[in-house]
Amino acid sequence: MIMAGVSNQMTTQRNPAFFNFVGGDGQVTVAEKRASDRGVAARGTSGVTSGRDRCKRGKACGATCIAGNEDCILDFPEPVQAELRRMAQYVLNRATKEGWAIVPGSEEDIQIGKGVGLLGSQLTRERKYQRGTGKYKKEVTERNFDTTVRGRSRAIAPSEMRDLKANRDKLGNAEFDEKARKALQAEAFSRGVNLDRKSLELIYDSLPVAAKTTFMGSGDPGKGSWYGKDGNGNDVTTLNNGTRDRGIAVLDMYIRQGGRDAYGNSKRVLSPADLDVEHIRPVSKGGLDHPSNWILARSGAQRQRANEELGRWIDKLPDPSNKAAMNKYYSDFAKDQQRKNAAKAAAAAVDPRKLPDADLIKVSPKNLRYMFNRDSFFQTGFYSPAGGTSRPNGAPPVPVSKAYGLVLKHNEGEAKEIRSLTKQIYNKNWFEDGGSTAKMTGDMINLYRQRLPAESFKQIEPQLKKWQAETLSQYPSGPPRVIGGSPSTGKTEKDIMADIDALLKTI
Image (tube, rainbow, N blue to C red):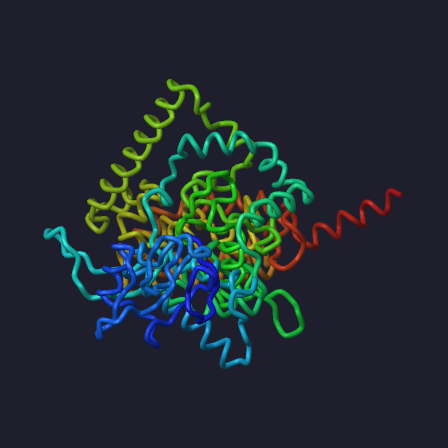
């Protein structure tokens, strides 16, 4: 649903302004709403007709009109009506306070109104669900964007497959070619409204805190991510959580894309929570976490793709016109989900503290995570040597995960300190500072030797020693990438300089 305008003028057929303050507070009485539903002029308490002009739909209630009076705000659910009014009121008050006159019916008025309408129409009120009753409690907890089942689903719908295959070359080329990337962004960003920075800030600041968090957290920001610019105009990438600047940048994309999936042709508007920052060139392959490498894509689909080459991933999808192939795709997908869910449930049902150490270290890190109440240590928080990522979003080495599992079993009180020390040794001392591989692996083994019972360490020691030998063989000169240095090449900055020196000697 598209809004038109935010000026506080009387909404009539001649003025497509968005926000109309009725009786000074923008509220519509029950009598006026009933009258509008009958298509007759509303009457006040004195019985005298209000004299308001009817809109194009024949209503005379004075409620907010939408899209140049083509639609009515009363067609929205009541919570959304309230959010639209609140947001528009905020924008008007801030603009007035800052001496910014929004001219009623102007292009500026209408464009800002479209942005407010797009965001406001996606806001919902979350209510606490009463288990077993099938009802919701009345109290409101927080206003946020709603995540839908469709948005989360990793299964690709037939319409999505048709779009992806139709745009295969355009999407696939964008991952490797800068010109193609810019063309993809230009097409996606032409679907909505392009607002100036001041307007974006007003709309962003009008959102509830939980909704702002959705924008700030899109794309899983961590160290090495983009957070805006400092006072000198330089990119800020040294923080660990989302910022207002990052949130506004994602909001800008959402409004410019019209709330639509950049990878598809559908005109369906998705909630901001259903879309996520997609790095056109994955960060693991040297792409930057920066607006110049961003578009918004449906969360479930882009998470199924993960870091796979986009063109190759699209080629693997079945032909949507082939019924047998489609049935097999969805059948295989359902079976795969069932296997994963069954494995998670089975792992979660096991008490790891009752398992012998020899059996515990045979469990995969993925299942250890569920056995230890979804402890995130097993899943993320470490730099990935294989991908040379610019932020710690990979899993720890497998033997280290299992050693940490033993810590959780025997010394849970020390687990928080040990996980911090583990990341210090691996992420900071080795990966970021370009430290010695021998020292990193030695420090890691000694950490767990000192903190685990002797018999427990004896069980995991062979796996840790094997990992040490393999890591030393693969990275004898240091980590595969120094954060903040050269792009991911599998070599440290020192190695690269040595290669250049050797090359110059041959010329």
